[in-house]
Length: 282
Image 1: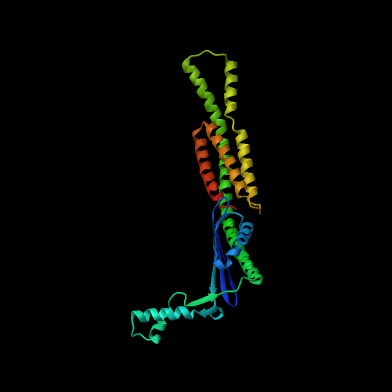
Image 2 (image 1 turned 30 degrees about the horizontal axis):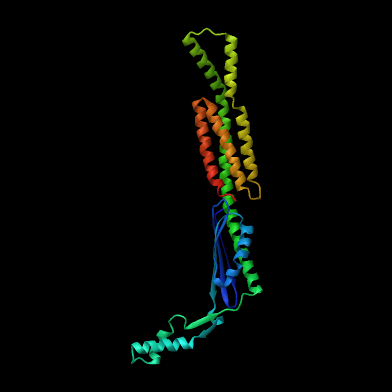
């Protein structure tokens, strides 16, 4: 959701620059810098950007440069005379011509006035704001294309790691059976073989990971499908990644095999990258 957009409006009497910057955020959080002359339009600007930008911590800046030739300006004659008088009281020998350049740099000796904001000017400004928002969204889209590439890579890595689990499933079952039989032999316990087989099967069923593998594969494929969506789905991707994490954790708790646990650790590493990158998805 990081992005930048800028648009400039050139009017006969002024130049208006609109800038938008956005950072990651779960909600729409707008901070504005608007000249007082246009402050009455702040609510409309907020509604406009909320619809166009949707989510993110957004900084909106509106800068106005008035054309000196087009300014409605006037001299404050009374204030200028007062400044001259004050200077001459301090330095009696100074002439009006000598003190005038200094006085003209004093505050408020020149006043500027603007007419009320008219609808035609606001419509042009509104269009400029929309152009800046479009530029921001294009920046986001370009960033999103790169982000999608990495998300797909991480998801496909998890799917590949999932296939690497299969060769160890049969091995770990045989290892568990041998371990139990060896322990029974060491303890010299005489048990009913049929009952032993039943208990062993019950125990091994609890370690079966078939359902976890199917769900994990489905969640990953669902995530990849949602990446193709043109709608805002950042939150949905976050929820799917949580489900992926649950299945990976269950695989780890049921693995009972060192090589499988190594694979699970690699899956978790890929998932952490996905969760971090998903925060940037609108």
